Length: 388
Ligand SMILES: [Zn+2]
Image (cartoon, rainbow, N blue to C red):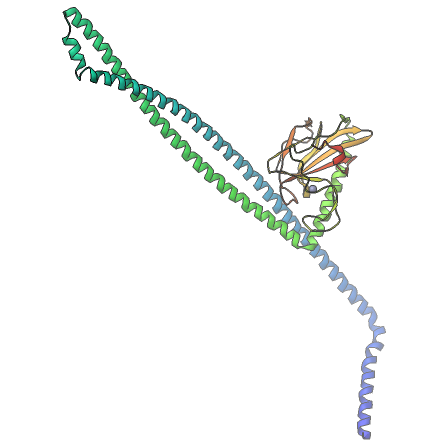
């Protein structure tokens, strides 16, 4: 290595030192500027995050509104289908009645036909021109006239029988036509029902997709659950506030099971894996009892309807105050209904039908989410209800 080369390396080293040192030296003077810049950047990020949160909230609100709209539409279609099924039933009953009338008419016709056949057979056996023969056999004018009167009566009888039979025949044809008409009506009613059912399936699918978007978005999911937890808490506060105004006393005894005849519990009270978000250790504030959409939900006891409305994740919900027992207020909550049948402030009796089973709010299938609340706080409902 020559002197020149050695100098060259020294030069590079110096340059490296200088290039390293320059910013370090400048740092002290620049730091304030940098901090300010950093602060600005942080502020921007914060703003952005807040904006994102806002967007997220707006999106969530949209999804929630969409779900509520879909729930309402499904509800309306269910009502329409119910009406259609009622008309089908009525039409079928009308057909049955007509068919019974038809059977009677046909039996009548058969009887008339038999009688007539007997008559014809008699006339045939007595010769084709029975009437004239009878007349010719008369022995006197008086006899002739009385025979003529007799024949007239027989002819009248035959004529009446024929007319009667014709009438029955016409009646039968008219009844058959009416039945055909009614059967056509049923076909079109059934077609309409199918169309409505398909429309409903479509809406349910869309609701499923909406729920899936919530499921897919972890951030939304978290917020969703938090909101549900909030509404669970909020409901508690509302119950506390509302029951404080009530002076009802609990009637005693165990509460009624809310879904008569259906005792399967698909999800018990307590910690569980959330069925929508999949989050483990989420708390389930009631019990889930599956039942077909439209099944009657009954009041677990005598009481006053505290709330009957759409409550966030609960969907269409009824809350009933059953009064105070040992200084504690007892109330029950029934969520995810398809239809509410009682109004807020209304008094209900144990066993009254208060709503119909549905899948509104954050629910994956038709069921009743049933809660028992003591002083507004949820508790395991099982010790408080008659179980079967
Ligand atoms: Zn539930």
